[in-house]
Image (cartoon, rainbow, N blue to C red; front, side, top):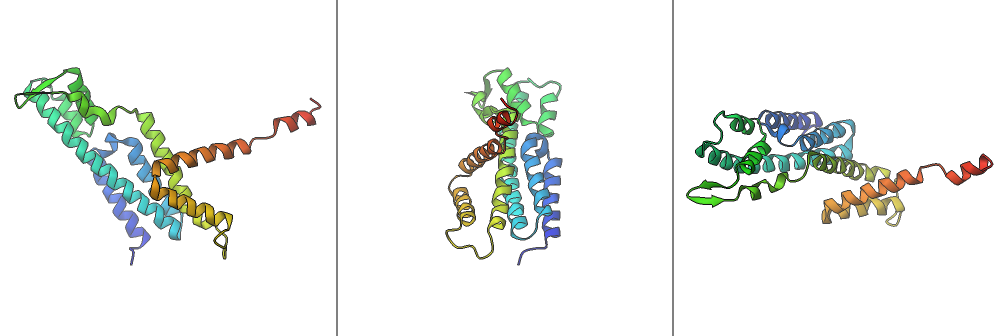
Length: 215
């Protein structure tokens, strides 16, 4: 038996607060905001749609926490190398790491070039690969994920009561759910393109307007 919606929301809020205190919000602001948005939308809905968005929020938070922990450990290894080489005399880079700003640690390592650690040369640039994308890229991914989650959560509600297996709404909902299990990234891309097409179809017919104006 699942916990009441209020309790589920409170538990997730506690995890988000703990992550923010540990620097996770600064580490990935779009990802953090994505989880908050999923939680807010789940609270605005009811039934299966609410549960689905809440489960999605938990899954996204799990990914964010794991990614932050793994990246934080790699950043700590580079911070220790910088300290051993006396390349952080003011402690500024260490302070950035404490606040969750792992990117500043990777940038500092790049700036100082190849460092020696344990008597061997280590190319630090490879460790910064996850940050080669920009904040705008991460924001677009989070926005696409939010749209996809909402579509999946509300799709079953669009199916009429008593709809048969070949009903159009039923087929569309089943297709979306099947695509999610195959590739979430492909599904997000597909929904984004369908939304673009829907926006184009909603535009007024320019030719009809010209005819009405006598053009």
